[in-house]
Amino acid sequence: MELLPILTSGDIEIIKVNQDDKRVRIEGVGLKFYNEEYGWLCGNEGNYFYDKEVADIYYTNENGIISLKGIGAKGEWNWFEVSAPYGYDITDVKGTFKIITNQETSVEITNKQKWVKLSGYVWEDNVNTKSGNGGVRNNLFRTNEDDNQDLLLDGITVKIIDKTTNTVAKDKNNNDLITQTRYIGNKYEGENKHNGHGSYFFQDVETDKLKDYYIEFEYDGLTYQNVLPYNNSKVQSVPNYSPNRASKAVENTRNEFNKNFSVVKGDSINTGHTETEDGKRVYNLEYGRDESEHTATLNSNGKYITSGNDFITQTSLGNYPIKSDTNTAGYGLGLRRWI
Image (cartoon, rainbow, N blue to C red):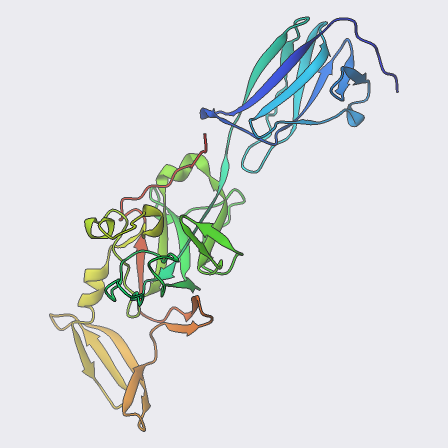
């Protein structure tokens, strides 16, 4: 190993930006620098090695910048990208720049963001029992200040659907983008801290296809109906309304679903069926009877367990599922980039 003194030098500022929105700076991109005259850059004082393996890796800061001082000004410099943060591909071509003696050179390099993580949560909207709030459901997720009874829902099936093919979308490894709401650790969603239950999480979702994707939720249609969405005027008139607290999904088959239960008939002491208004038989029903309580309970609807003070778990979808989705609600998916 040999360190070489440099007589002429200048400064370099590398700026890493998002290829599709250059206002966005990228933190955590790792680069190495090479010059045929000097070798591989190490340290921040104009020192060099001949061995690439021991050369330093320089990382962009929170502003997407690598700032180097006193770099040798002879010939061309090459940068090589060796690491990139989640979602970005490593740029596979080297780039070049020149140092001007006693001046600062600025170089902008773009990276393509190809993959993104996507998350959200599902909740049960309950009657608010705090005094002065009218004892009503408000179609918004709870806050500590004005809504105290909503519960998070585990076990709800969530899918990302490609509306160009009407099929489940795939991640970068060609796996179906299907999951269930569950505990994924303490979360902060909008204005609401919650305990991490009721959350869904996807990763490796292709950014260029987000415009063609929507999110679909499936649950028991006899137990639950989707609340009014974020863009409904009634919801927007609720005190302390925020779109971050409101539903981004709407059911698109509720009327048809309800028509399948227009008529309910008993076939025996423990069985029955449903019909449409025009007499078409749709669902067979089975009941569990409790003669001491004089009650009969439908066996094949969804099963839910109150698992804690803040959440419920769906343990069985049942035979009467219904779906809601973000596309019907007019809510599109896209990147949230912080500028």
